[in-house]
Image (cartoon, rainbow, N blue to C red; front, side, top):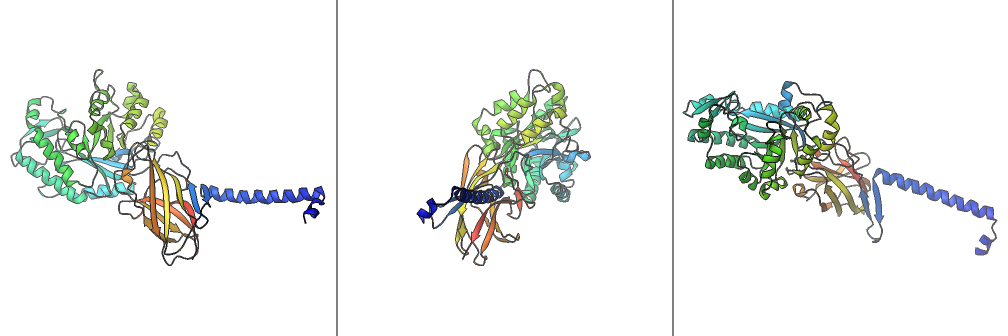
Amino acid sequence: MAEGIRQMPNRLIRTSFLYSLAFAVVMLEGACSLASSLNAVSHDDSAPAEPTVTVHPREIKDVLYNPGMGLADFHFGFGHPPSTDQYPRQTVAYFRWSWADLEPEEGRYAFGFVDRVIEQAKTQGKTLAFRIMTEYEAGSPEWLFQKGVGSAKVGRGVFPDYNNPTFLIYHEKLIKAFGERYAGSPDIDHVDIGSVGCWGEWNMACCQGVEAQCQQYYPVEENQIKITEWYLKHFSGTPLVMLHGGQLKYAVSRDAGWRGDCFGDYGYFSPTWNHMEHAYTPALQDPVIESAWKNAPVQFEVCGVTQDWYEKGFDIDLILKKGLEWHVSVLNAKSSPIPTEWRPRIDEFLTKIGYRFVLRQMTHPAEARPGRGLSLRSRWENIGVAPIYHDWPLAYRLRSAGGHVVARWASTAHLRRWLPGVPHEVEDVVTLPEDVLDGSYVLDVAILDQGGHAPFVDLAIEGKRQDRWYPISTVMIRR
């Protein structure tokens, strides 16, 4: 045979070689096409008894409109929300309500009103954040003052006596009632620890002309801590943020986050003092406050509106850089149009704010048997600036070629621990159903809502299906 090959004409040898080469190219193109559909795929045949598959999903750079991160609206835009061309899509609906609105009559709480706002937010793809106020406009209810609680008339509201025992008794009842109703609800993104001072902002800025009376009525430190503690106690399971100016260190030491209501202020009120350099920066010198973002969210509200920044010549790049350095999750730009010239910068900012999960690698056996375990090893990275602050589970499922889901499992991973800057390794062993038929199945992943019902979080990778699951790889099932 070897002698015969040596005697073959050169033309036949070349033809045979070219045919073999063409066949190899066709096979390679087919393999590349499959690898493209599953992203980068490789097989490890070093252990013949159990070859494995490793996939490397492709990262995307799009803005992700996920819960608990991004832009907030302000009271749904007060009836005149800007278009998405003027103000990017929002994920949080932010409201401030007075005590009088929430308890117009003693013991009668406006749960129906709040529930309707929650439902309206959900139809817009948003979760709710809110603050309770006791001074602004309606402020504290009239029935409270009729019980002998003192007050001072200020601006458009009434400043109550926060040290009055009657005020304290009934205000705790209010917070307890709303905590019993909404604490831990997946519909609530976060709650401001408000209640005190002008606009619920723990200050006396509205007290022009009655400063001495407001100072007398402002809660002493003991009562400030009491009010803070009520939120921590009655809203357990809900992310909380304490405003700069309140009992900030105490609150964050108890796993609350923090909020700045004049973000971007580099001279809005005064050329010699501003919030960014003279309020927030010094507060963050305290390591307890600086590290609060690891456990609870950092939320900001713009000082004025962004158009004011533009007209005053503020450095937008510096402002946004500080927001990322301070690990912001949600920015409330007050439902006011963003200057057109700054929109690209805001859009880029929204690709970095909050959390941003990338699945870098998934490895699993190429084949599995019904009733047996399937090992799933993955490596993830959070390339945002903050973790998530709710217990949203990572999940897997197997889907047939016809789209029928034959199995679904929850991961043991704790996503709230996924801080930025380090890889996160996940190892799960799931059990296949006994009755699953032989065949090839798609392996999907998703991050579900708090109840584990449906996908809730978009990943920064390609391939999202309409149902928000991500097809990652394929598994062959053989008996």
